[in-house]
Amino acid sequence: MNKPLHSHLLALRALANPHRAQIMDWLLDPTRYFPPQRDGDLVQDGVCVGFITDKVGLSQPTVTSHMKSLEQAGLVSSKKIKNWVFYKANQATLQQIASSFTSASAALYPSPSCPDTDCTGIGNTRS
Image (tube, rainbow, N blue to C red; front, side, top):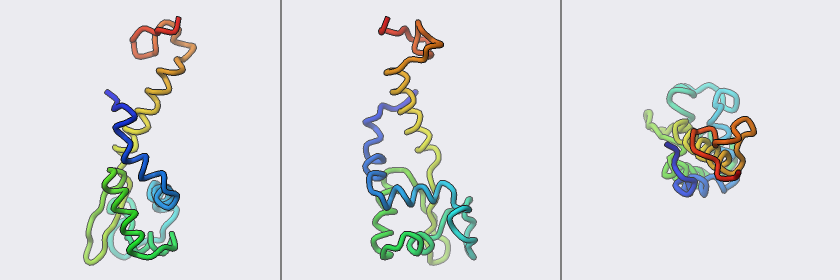
């Protein structure tokens, strides 16, 4: 069962900031946007906050604040390795958000291939 769109407001608010949205884009494909790390695997462990800070061009406290917002929204998870914090995208949360938008869209615009239902087996009330 999909969550209603309003249940994703914290995540959507977090992504409304252009710096956080950019960081999320990078974290979704870390090997493309970041160099190999000495500690921690880019995909398995996440990206070191130092690399994120260098790439985004903001101060370390500002980046930490952005990452905290993304983490509180469930969009990223963090892992401490030695003295550094590593962040990676939370694929499950992103899938839930995408699924909610897909369901909302299907309810508004039923597929022509399912004229009598909304393709979930529930009757279409737009006859």
